[in-house]
Image: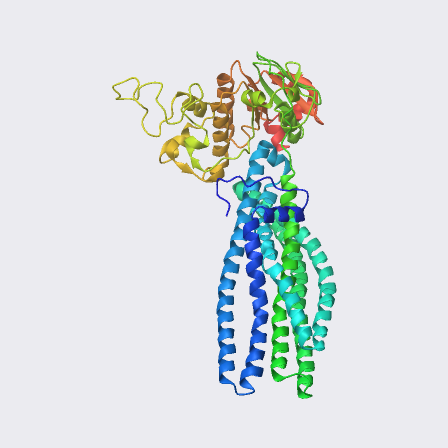
Length: 594
């Protein structure tokens, strides 16, 4: 199987079927072994009726004990050997499926890493989770066709030859197989359509589950829990109904795969019994015909099952391929970034960010301000410029090292708090558990290490600016305290302050913060606003907000209407001159009561 650190290869993402074939070609030896074991195993199943017929005709009927013993021994040996083949076939195909599973997981995870920050803008969390949880299993399961599937085809042909050699009545079975294909084929096509729709709805619902898990406390606080629960109940009901439709088609496919061969078995057995009664065939031949037809149920059932698995596998592989086709934002820039602090300009909205100032973006629709930030941070294609040079002409690495977009819903990975905020022993960058800037009380050396769990100067400054010191003090082990993924064991306001502290700790030349105080109470929000202005003095900082407590601390405010700058200026000036702005941000008692 593929090693955890092995290169999974370059997947073929031209289509679902081509992706499945790529998984086969990545392990040709194992797939060939699986096909060999499956073929020999299936063919030897047909040897059992033949050996039984010989034991009856050559040994039992004439009373020849030596012949009976010989053929009985051969029957036992073939059965034991076939049991071993069955074990080897199962082991080999399990490894084929596991390799396909792990390889698909690796290419999907690698693609997610490759997409980076653009992943969230191109694929929903539900889609990625559905691929990782369900589609990967179905894709790997479909590779069963290379083992028992090939064996079923060969076994069917061998049994067909044996049947025809015994009696012409076997043509009833052989002619019935095309009828089975005509009946099952359209069902498999219908199954693909139903399965695709089911997977799409499943991805949407999975994403909603993640959103609910992350925002349950907020929903409860706003009294919207029942409303969302009712909507989720309706959507899950629709998914259940779609699952019933998929199950209905599946049940018909499986019923035909088992039922029709069994019907043929009954018909052929009846015809063969009449021929034996008339003396046209021997009793041994009658037993062999019955055995051949009974064994024929296996390859036919395998063929139908493989068709079902491949049909589902193609649907899921298409979802994997669609994800693999996504491309990160093109990095075609070759120019250097401005060598000195320079203005950012977004021509689509008219927003101009002057260097060294604290600027706010206020929009009637918050998404408009976020879109401007995405363009200024080069997370969306645009004609935005930096110092007169288009951002897409500047090397992306230089933009990422100097411009930071701090999203208020950015991911927080599980680990200790100092790992979560990115503390490290790097000069000038902040360093979680590092040497203290001032000697701790009782220390005998100014270079003594800070006590366990104590932040050093840069980390302490970032936590102070984000008003997050109380969070550290409340945790049992301070910065060493382990936290859950997305810091779910903290409140929404605490998570927001941790995200802000993490952004401040990087000390970027340009900080673009999206709603950095939206989940904070008024007192904490005012504290953060005052400290943020002081901490970022002389540095370019942009915040999207409608909070007057934050706006009062800014140098310039851009008021956006329909995504365009309607007015710009100091907060108090816009309050006096722009009615739309005043209505949006004012929070006096009369407006609240009104």
